Length: 337
Image 1 (cartoon, rainbow, N blue to C red):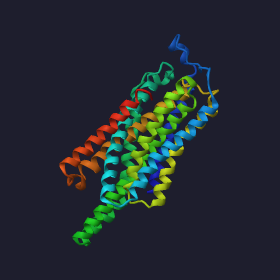
Image 2: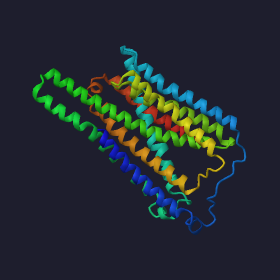
Image 3: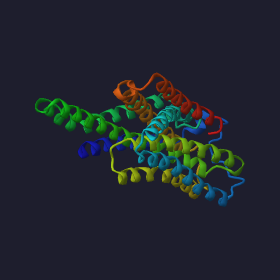
């Protein structure tokens, strides 16, 4: 499993580095030729209050922590009412994740790859890069899942030949739990990548847009934290591991804000490096989230989950309504961020 992850990471790193290097090598002399009057130079920040942006670091940290650790804490409570509430939060979270991919990540990636400041070497392929990188991400996620479950499948196949029926069912449950853990790891990686980009944008945001964007990002982080926390809570990981996973989420966006604050004087969102990097990261994140949403979450947690099929019709309706409500929440937030 470790060897497989290393190989996959190296493949992704080489691909990312080669494309980015190619873009930057051709980007500087392509702007004036194709863009005419389009100004791709950095825009000077006229009003920027450092203290306000520093406050934002702690606000986002607190809100993100509340969202993810609130759900993880809820998962430590063992009762039917808590299990019911956690299931509804999980369904709300599935809608949040789907809405993030379709309404936030994909449009932003299309915006970057359709920019008039896109390097000339990449402008011909343009917005097709969104689908390309999203597809690459989805394929890599599938390979990771296949590679990680290969050994587990071999053990399970052997057990089916020697174990009694009850123990076979237990082995099948262990396989499902293993898949859920891998899916959660992959999902968190996609969310963290997206969160870093959000933080960077907030860190370089001027004062006249900052308050509105901060409020929108705060709600976004709260909802997304609830979504990720509810999925972490339902895995069979130890509480310590769940806490470690939970810590990564509230720290990532504030880290992005700090980076934005540090580079605010030199950062140019119209520069080739910024456009290509943000476009690629958003495309990869959308591919990861879309694959995870439909294959791991909707597929495993709803369509093929015997427990979900056993729910009463009324509770099933409530679950679907919560999922649609989560997606609707992200659709509304798209008005501001």
